Image 1 (cartoon, rainbow, N blue to C red):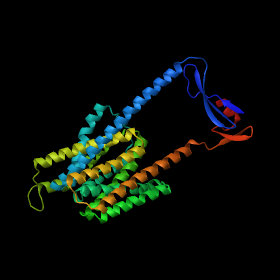
Image 2: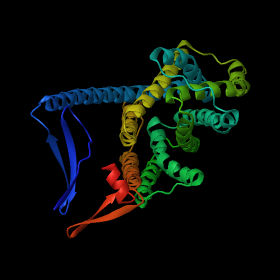
Image 3: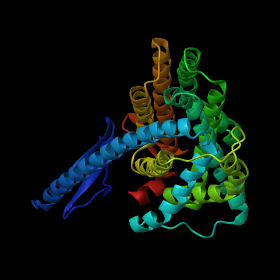
Image 4: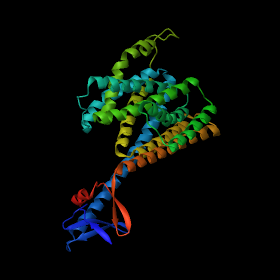
Length: 396
């Protein structure tokens, strides 16, 4: 025996989809009240339009990922060339922040990016926005120091430890607990970085520590940026503009006291540092490429799922390591490559474990906390969501 509940999930001209449930389970049926075929025609047209829209979206994502990989690898290679001839990582960071500040405003207005709300309270601003700007500056400086001191391939291998810092900091700050699978996925990451460190031919302790500090800073940015975006509703590109501009003006006095004084009076030679046209062109290119990399990364993040973005980011790291090894010609060993590969695979395993954890939480949240047992014939089944017969009858 079946008890049929007709719930109008979707209506066409003269049709309705029906859910039925009974002694042997649940099912769906479509009931059309006459021979009108406009329902099927409209559904078919909708399917065709959906397929075309999905195809355009896939092509857009593919194009953005390719551009992201090319821009990011070019930015890292140019950054290494720049810092080899111009060892002033704080100045390189200030040029990048200046590029974000100058280019973002006009281009975001041209692209129609919505402006951020002006009702952010000052206590909230100083509690979250200012620390984010501080973290952005210091993470960028230490990232440049790591690229200056060690090869790009090794620096990016060390930065693969970001999931480790994210798990630890989320546990300390947000009291978040992870599944055992997530914790186990950190083992190959740590092991791979350890193998790469022990077999790195151009190892430098300052470079290693700078890469670790930069990775921890970027992890903190990811944690608090999500909170700011959720609390304020500000567009992610506008938040990038806010942080870049704030970090620029906050650290302008620090740059004037340290790097600018060193540029005017080199303590080694006793003269001012000569900046060639090549260095100026590299600074200009590095600033533009860094700005474009941030724009493309945020654009990819806004149109794909977190798992897809994480996999794309891990693939980008592989691409950057391969390009840097090919272009810059850094000497590597077989064990060194093994450590890099193991760390990247660990990142992919971590992303998959986090995705499974999020899916499990979603399923738990979809199920109501109460259910009412109904018996139909001899087989009992549950109708979730209705507190009693009266509410269920009204809903049906």
